[in-house]
Each structure stands twice: as structure tokens, then as C-alpha cells.
Image (cartoon, rainbow, N blue to C red; front, top):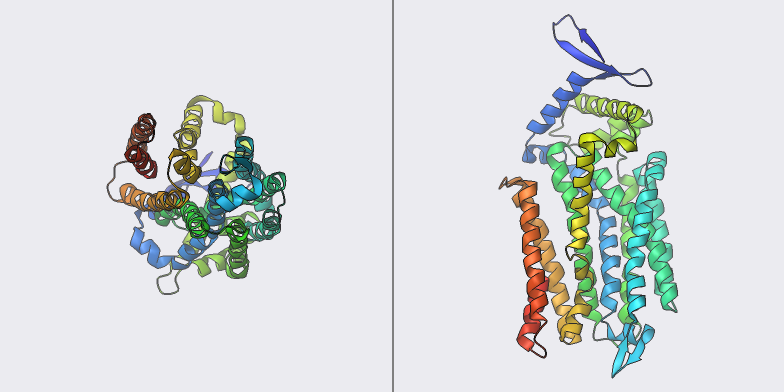
Length: 410
């Protein structure tokens, strides 16, 4: 680390990365401070195009939410049960092992896809990686659509899930790299809303087709998955590439053009200043990469940060969130008929939509803090799960069944 004093008398801290480029820490700090002072409305006026493209890339996450939800909805779908299930009593049921296998197919693929997404994103950019994943999705929807057995359908879920793993990494990465700090939180949170929208559409489609007894009761929902990649592939040629990625590739002028496309022509920010901030941030990241490794995540204060990050994501899973996927089947097993089960499933995802929107106001206007909101939600979730458990004790009680379903939706 060096310290330079210019003719103005202003001392600048300068670091040098492994390539020998200067990292002006004071300059970076000033640019970051200016971003923090930029208000939400002003940022929205300056970056309307960036806002649009961040939301456009989130369409890919809608696909992920849709596919993950629709397969669970099929467990309670009479036509799907008859085609792939085993006779039981007066009807049919998908064997429990296959329910688990099908339900885990998408998440397994997503985990593998997310882990594999880093290299192609850095090598080929965000746009080209997303385009290839869309083509991949189109191909493996064919496997799901024409599946003749549960094993073939499970393979389609796993292989299709690989692309969905890419989507859930590409969308927030792109949003965070093209948007200013004032918009970054909201537009990365929009990723969760996109996921809920996908679940909501899946529930609505399944509820609308619940009364059909032919193969289109489950084939039509699969076919709908061809819509999203086509929309994305049509729009991608017009989407600007990430300025951060372009700078890392040494394409400074292309990065400038991308920033110009992402900002408003009437209320344009200082493009030179924004580009300088991107360059300085990239140099700092290069320096950190050269002086740290993954083991540093588990040392000292960084270990605490790593533990917090892991638990924040893990608690969402172990606190009952997977039950949402089984909502329709859960309602049916609790005693509701198929039509009521699907209607309650639609209500479940609709309330998820409302909850996501509400979280934006809690985060941005009420200043309660992330930790307070998170812990309060966990306590409420714990209470509701206990209530659902106790309500299952009475048998053949219609009121208790509806109370369980209502608590499940909440």
C-alpha cells in the first residue's frame, strides 16, 4: 500500500494489483459514497433501462419457480396420478419414493447448475450464457413433455434443473452489476418475487386443469415452459452486456456504451464517473483475489460471516418452506377434495406474492433492520407450524382441516 500526495494537497491511498494497475482507494470511496447518497427515485429516473433489463432477466427465475412448483402440484392431479401412479383404494397415488425423487430432481439440478455457472459466465458473459441455458431448457422440456415413465420424467427434471441453477445465479448477478446501489436491493429482491410469480402461475395452471381427465391435464403445464425461453431469446440481442464483465475483458469502450444504454438520455448520470467506479471496483476485486483464498472464509471474523450467511439460507429450508411445494398434496391428504386443494394452493402462492411485496416496504421504509424482520418471521413460522401439528390431532373434523389449510397458506 502506498500513499501519494498530489499538488492539491489531497492525500490518496493507492494500492497496486498483481497486474501493476493502480487502485485509488480514496477515489473508490468517494464514488461509493455518492452512490449511497443517490435516492431511490433519482436512481430510477437515471437508470430506467437498467431497471427494465434487470426485471427482464428475472423471467428466467420465473421458469425456475414454475417448474419446481408444477411437479409437486401433479401429485394431487387425478390425471397424472392415473397415468404414472399405482392403484390404491378407489383411486391412484404416486409412490412416496418417486414423489421424493421427482421433487428432488429440480433442486439437485439447480445445485449442480449453480456450482457450474461461474466459469461460463466469466468466459462468455451473462447474455451468451443465459441464451445457451434457454436453448438447453427448450430441449429438456421435450423430455418432460414426452416422458413415458417416472424415471424418464425424473431425468428430465434433473437435466432441466441444471439450467435453472444457472438462472438463479445469472439474474441476481446481472441485476447487481447494471443497477446503482439505490436500486440494487429492490431489484435483487425482485428475484424472489419472480420465483413466487412462477409458483403462482404453476398453481393457477394446475388448478385450471384439475378437472381434465386426459393427458393434457399435465402435458399442457409442461408445454407452457416453452414460452419463457422464447421470450428471453427474442429480447436478449437487445440487452446490454454487464459493464463489469466488459471491463474485466478489457473492453472499456464497450462498457461505456453499455452504461449509456442502461441510463436515461434525459437524466443521465456522469458516465465517466460511473465507468471509473466500475474499473476501480474491478481492480480492488482483483487484488482481493490475489491475496485471499477460500480457506480465509473460515478464519477469524470471516468465519462468523460465513456461518451467518449459510444459516440465513439454510433456515429458509429447514423452517418448513419445502412444505409449500407439497401444499396441494398436503391439503388433499388432510381431507380436502381435489378442487379445494388446488384453490388453496393458489391462495398459498398468492399470499407469497403479497409477502414479498410487503418485505420491500419493511426493508426500505420502516427501518426495522434485516435481523429483526428475519427473526420475527421465524418466530411466526414456528408458531404456525406448531398450530398445524396440533390441528391434525382431531380426526374427521372439517373445521380443523380448513384451519390447517389456512395456517398453511399464511
